[in-house]
Image (cartoon, rainbow, N blue to C red; front, top):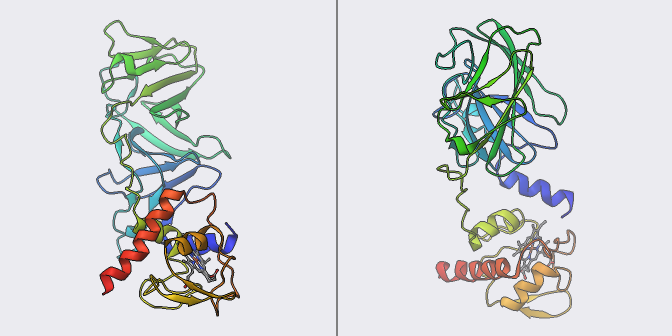
Length: 309
Ligand code: HEC
């Protein structure tokens, strides 16, 4: 698709959507049903998560688009914004990384900040009970989340990661990381710096992204509405209002609008150019829309007429 079309479509989708480009985004934002000091991270691979900065607890993840900032732009105090996907709770205990006692939430967590490093996972820095730590979280494989902590080299205290909320099978300890005998937490020997754990989320509620049902209207909104109105308004292309069944003057000859004509317009738009619309060429959707999707669009355009009558 050419740049101009993409721009038009992006505007149609709503300018308040925050998208991740080719490197991770970190965004402090007030989100619905989320503690106020949350930070959202979005990755180019459509994996996103939210971490509670006060306790450095990863809270939930979602896949798909990043954030919708509508709330932030409306009203003075800033209303909560929303995530653009189905939220999957991680259900980790609060502040899962602990020093000294695996069953005790830390007394004191000081959030220092975060570093972004190009395309790498952003790093959150904090002090937990006086111990400096850095945390990264990412996902490379569907249904899996990896958390990695970097610990001080000269650390004296035993460190633990509480796995509560996860079955033993769902936890893959990283190198050097071992289970406590009772299976309630992982630990890493003193002297080792890198504490990694991979958590499997298969079967978690919400994880199976509810696929948006593909309808003709949805396809129209996504692919056609930037140039074709339904209500008679003349845009870059002719309106779809009263299109079905009409005989249109195209540059070559009169063309009756039927399924075949619409299909050809989508795949090979330059085949018939509608009189008066020769200036801006319509892009071809060949390879972008499937035959089935084009059928849905044809029915949508046809039905649009039947409803008008
Ligand atoms: C970038 C703008 C643009 C987009 C996006 C676009 N079109 Fe078009 N379309 C045009 C223009 C301009 C024309 C008139 C020139 C022509 O006939 O090729 C046209 C013509 C048509 C026609 C013939 C209309 C008539 O009055 O005879 C059909 C049917 C059509 N488009 C369907 C679609 C469908 C379906 C989509 C979405 C999948 C779509 N178009 C997306 C610009 C666009």
